[in-house]
View (tube, rainbow, N blue to C red):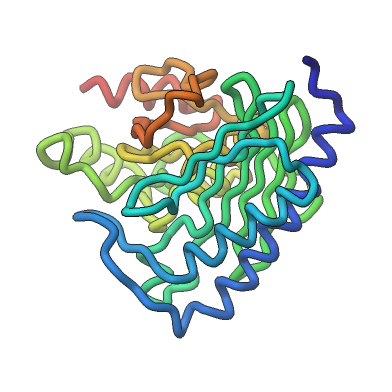
Amino acid sequence: MVIEQKDLSEMLETAIVAARLAGQRAMEEINYTKVSEKNATELVTQADTQCQKIIIDRIKENFPDHGFIAEEGQFGKLFKQPPRGDRAIWWVIDPIDGTNNFAHQVPLFAVCVAAMYKGEPIVGVIFDPATESMYTAVKDGEAQLNSRRILAGEEDINQFSSIGLDSHFESLGGLPAWIYEIIHRTRFRNLGTTALQIAYVAKGGLIATIVNTPKLWDIAAGAVIAEAAGAFVSNWQGEKIFPMDLDSYDGAKFQTIVANKKVHAEIVELLKK
């Protein structure tokens, strides 16, 4: 079944409204929310579950047969509800990307809402409620920030450019050698939110971001936006991440590179060192 432009527009509008409502709630809760440990590396707050419910409820009003994959399920697991009907469309949701920032009252986080069809993201919204910045795109459309077109640009690796880095490299046994080269050659950044780092690549603020442990909800919305802005999205070997099997997805992590076209190949080679 073909997804038409009208369908994409309706899903995008729903995602924008849902993300804005959730972001507004998050900002209301940031100084008061209760914090607990979800696992050894992640915190969760009361606002995470509240914002997720706001998003899902809003989407269900317009698309009751669609499925959901979201970060906050029971007992620290993901929330998953398969789609019904002919169109196997999944919504992939991270209610607060940057929970550690949020839990420490640092207003640097994002609400992420994506729609996926046949294993590929087709609608993406990243909302930064602290700055009222709404990043949006649909597959094969324009990437926009607050309804104005954005592009990833073609800046190369230099002493004034910035590359976003992850903060989780335990699985690699420590910091890999290529990180030291990036630190030496660029003004590297870690924002504490994968989604915003991808959004900044899409608008040309970062030339790339390299993340070791993101899950689907961290990258799905950003992948649509970044590719619409002219960036490349791949794994660390330079291969495409999508399409993927959503029916079997259980929270696996994806080593991910999002980079402008000028530097993507160079970064892939750098990570092989």
